[in-house]
Length: 115
Image (cartoon, rainbow, N blue to C red):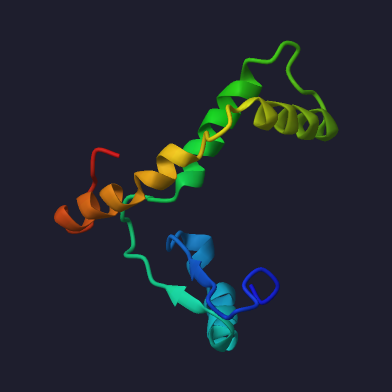
């Protein structure tokens, strides 16, 4: 975090999944809490992270490849190739929709939304 956000404005968000809320992870977050802000996300809230949709699109693109990747190096190459095939500005739409997505989440009081 200190490398990416040397200005001290970095913020860590986790989704309270079991591995993220383990004793080890919780202890580490407490020990390093002075190094960054920790955004507390309500458990079992809808995942508002745009990376989930991006991973899904990337996964589907790789699954359509023929022949499919057979080794970890093949998979790495396929992922890079498919990422490069995304149109310019691919992430712009989900980034721009973020404020609307959060507003929907607030209206739903953390319950599922249409996103």
